[in-house]
Structures are given as structure tokens and as C-alpha cells.
Image (cartoon, helix red, strand yellow):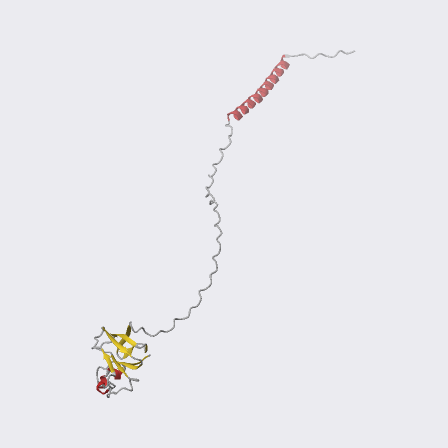
Length: 213
């Protein structure tokens, strides 16, 4: 029976073991140092902090809503009114004999009322023309029935007695004269009897027939 040979440790073998141990120690230490260095790096790096919140815009101020107003009180509609009754125009009245009856004298005409009540009548003759004029009251059926000269002037000397009732003096332009007469019912002629021939005021149209009742 063979005996198992024993392993002898020789100095060479010891040296190999020692070198292996050193190598292992070197590897292990390197890992630890790298780990420590990594930890240091991670520790030294500044910790990231959260960014401050962004500034928010201030809310826009809005106008306050208008205060509620009370609705206007209901008003009753105006009562319907009846239209005014139609009135008839006043009846034409005869001129008041006591008041001044306007008589307008101008080139070439004579303007005045044609109807009068018998009694005292006051004529207010005004000259609105450029030449002097006069007012003469003559009793007669009409101007054409009176004695006339060529050109139309009234021939006063040929009038019946009492036919020439009254006359004013000459009335300057822009002036006025009153003539008061007492007339009985009948027909009369108002006339401006100045001038003669072709210049007769009566012949040019200053005449007016009137009736007194």
C-alpha cells in the first residue's frame, strides 16, 4: 500500500501566496476608495433646489357692477281730452260810428269800409302816399253820377245844394286828419278831389262809393 505524498511548502510557494494576497488587497482597496470617491462626488454636488414660483400677474381690477336702480314708478296715461269745439267766425259788424273809421289815401287809391250805420261818423284819414291828399264826403248815388270835369275831377260848383257834406284840409305825406260828419241813410262818395285834368286824383282812382243805412 502506497502512502499519499505530502505537500511541502517551499519558500517559492510562500512568495507566490504573498504576492497573490497583496494583489487581492490592492484590488479590494481600490474598490473601496472608488466607492468613497463616488460618494464624495455625490455629496459635494450641490443639491438641486426647486425653482421659485413664477410671479403671477396681479388680477385685473374690474369695475364694480352698477348699483341696481329702482324702476321708474308707473304713471297713469294722461286723460283723453276732447278737441275744442269749432267756433264760428264772428259775424261781420258795421263800423262803430263813434270810433275813428280808418281811411287810407295813397297813389292812386282810397281804402275804407263801404257800409256804415247812420249817425255821427268819425273818419281817420291817413296819407300813406308821397303827394298831399284830402278826403271829401259827397252825397250821391255813385262817383259816376256826380258832375265831372274832363280828367275826372268832381265839379263841386255844379253839385246840388247840400251835397258836399265835408272835407279835410290837405294831408301831407305820412300825416293823419280826422273828419267828423253826421250822415243820414243814403249813398255817398268818398273822394280826393285834388288836381285837375290828367292829374286829377279822383280821375286816377282815389274814389270810393259807400252806403249808410
